[in-house]
Image 1: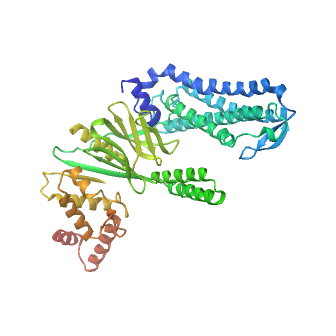
Image 2: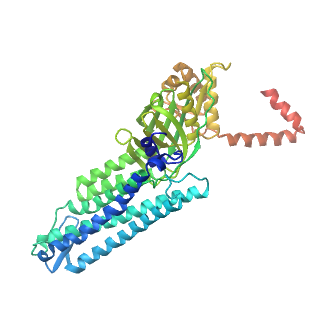
Image 3: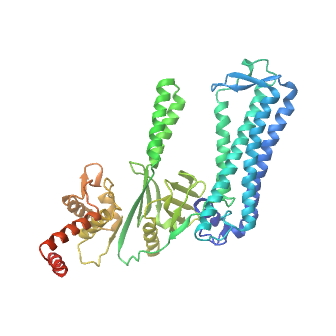
Length: 369
Length: 115
């Protein structure tokens, strides 16, 4: 963990309990910059757009602007010009307030040295650590929700302004069918990305406490294999609901695009009903879902060390990519997880029962290899 | 579920495998309905012949602990008794032995004689 970049990777995604001073010392200024960017520059740019776009187009807008659309993009409601933009402006202010509170919380926790800023503060056991994790997760969530509201507001303001500019009536103010989904989708992406960046690089990570790095005491000549699993209660109902919704949308509305998308996501969700992790001399294999599809295989020679952690996740599912981002997290539930540090600095984490035994065996196998 | 194979252990390899699967079923780390590793893969991982693993799986099936299905492989059977049942059986046995007037030392001797 002497390499700062490696330390950041481990700290952001999987936790920071083992980073004794790593990014806290080296990543300080960079972390401050990221937090300023996400909590300061981005909201300021959104607010500027909310004010500047209507202001620039004001004289070309009708007195009553179309401000309500059907899902297909046909305008079906109007409001006075000023009221329409003021309502959206209030939404943006609420969002800005949330971002501000979140930002203030990160600055306060940095100043106090409390573990709210978990990557920078030394890991303290017990209640303080738990409080720190909750604070960090809550702070990132507050900033994310605030940014989401602001982005929805900014998108809506721009849409209302652009759709109504020089438009004579309702019909002329119609927009394309893809605009309204994008109006929610893009802010969702922004909020998710901001939350990810804050947790990954901003030090607002949910720290996972290590629970074991022991050894099984494998004797020379002894061979061993370990298999563990994790189950998610939420995955089956979610998958069934998505598939049912897809079938319903397809048969009732005959809109096959959304129907197929729902079906595909539903079937992919089945992959998270359970995972099965196998540790053997050939390395680590992860099988997903009821069929146990083995999509993740990490050879033993790539693994530097393994540790069992107690995971308190902010989100569930598969996040990251070993190949693209150098970190991947398979989180089906909270609780025990196996965290692998790879020789090239990458990190892989998978929730699995009795991870301590798996980690111990893996470390023995690495030592014997 | 952890399976360790020690070549220095005097017990035969298939028995080592069988005992450890039994123990995993007993302590609940292998739940009913759960799949055991495919025999060929397990054999490769612990460096034994695939027939050795199949021998162990066969004994476990004969004991009613697992089912061998053509396509799903070895699955822990629904009737596989967890270890808590053993304690209940022991309590019942001890109660009966006391009814027969046996002292604790005599009960232990009785069990030791069967081992």
